[in-house]
Amino acid sequence: MKFTPEKPPLTGETLDSLTERLRAQGEPAFRGKQILEWLYKKRARSWEQMTNLPKPLRSWLDETFDLLPASLVLKKQSEDVTDKLLLELRDRSLIETVIIRAPQEGVGLDHSRKTICISTQVGCAMGCVFCASGLEGLKRDLSAGEIVAQLLQVCYREDERTPRARAELASFDNIVVMGMGEPLANYDALLRALHIVNADWGLGVGARRITISTSGLVPKILKLAEEKLGFRLAISLHGATDEVREKIMPVNKAFPLEKLIPAVRTFSEKHGRMVTLEFILIDGVNDSLEQAQKLRDIARDLHAHVNLIPYNTVEGLPWKRPSITRQERFADILRDARVSVTLRREKGHDIDAACGQLRLKTEKERLIGESVVGEAVNR
Ligand code: SAH
Ligand code: SF4
Image 1 (cartoon, helix red, strand yellow):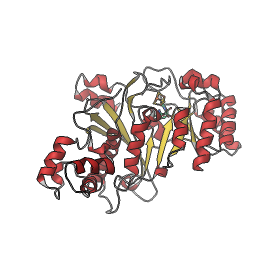
Image 2 (cartoon, protein in one colour; image 1 turned 135 degrees about the horizontal axis):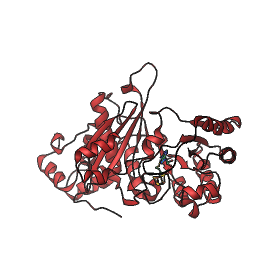
Image 3 (cartoon, helix red, strand yellow; image 1 turned 30 degrees about the horizontal axis):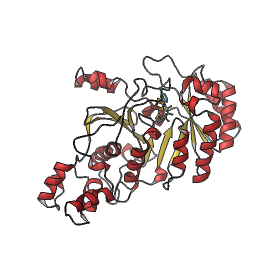
Image 4 (cartoon, helix red, strand yellow; image 1 turned 135 degrees about the vertical axis):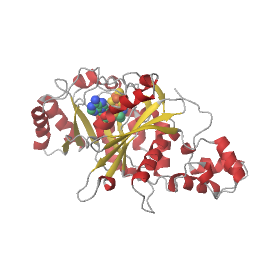
């Protein structure tokens, strides 16, 4: 399930791996740092812009690396606070990267906090019955370079909107790995990408500003707990008992709650930080008061934060969100027990919904023509 491009992307190189390649070419050791500075700090978008590199080196780089393996096909700014970037990869696969702006009092939208939602796979193999990303199965994993490229594209976009403060590296505040795909099923590429994003020679985004969301791959959660970088973790729970959870998330058969919950506890103890339990509210499926009570108990036990997300309808799927009264009653059971809980309502604030249901039909529709892709994205 891998795609091998003609040239490896520069965005997939670490300082070490790049320096190594350059050294083999007889280049001095400082070149690697210089090139990555052009890429991540000065935002050079072509080799020609890297003006302090000798011309023959620039030609070699051009022959050897793909500077950025994802091109912007379309950007769609909605009336609210989310921006969607539709990106095309070298094999013509399409992925979406979402920018969510949280308005802050007294400042315009351009100065608001920005959270970026990134994808890790084209499609998804996990088969959760409510999710658009998995409807057509997994097409392929993204490479580390493709994951990083989404964030650079966001930087380009944001730099155009607001000139950067000099010392600023990334043009955003937080990253949530909640786009298309199951991040922990593409573990190595994800970790390499996040290492690049985190490094001071990369985008310099602190691990605490990065949240990885998983449907619950237990061995990988335990592996992640051992990593040096302390990323934040969110678990897509969506069912507070095995009976409910396995109806909507096939992953629960391999990793039922009795395995998942101890793994989350291990992670949370190791990193000393609250884990988030995501719980989509789907009418008549997981929104009973018994589910709320069970969820309350799990959250208390894990000392976790609960993020309740009213389900967003997906074309072709039968599920819908419960009424507001029912959502509130569900939330109250958690609030009454002093569980830290958010029930997202405002359209643009809904990070999870914004990126939880990435475009299903774009691939197909593109076959008919670019204008139709526009429609698909606007829908
Ligand atoms: N595969 C990972 C990360 C991507 S999904 C995971 O499942 O955690 C990001 C979040 O969006 C998940 O919690 C997912 O369950 C949720 N989601 C998927 N479809 C949704 C929908 N139609 N409405 C609301 N949230 C949805
Ligand atoms: Fe995959 Fe997450 Fe969607 Fe489940 S919810 S199908 S794991 S993207």
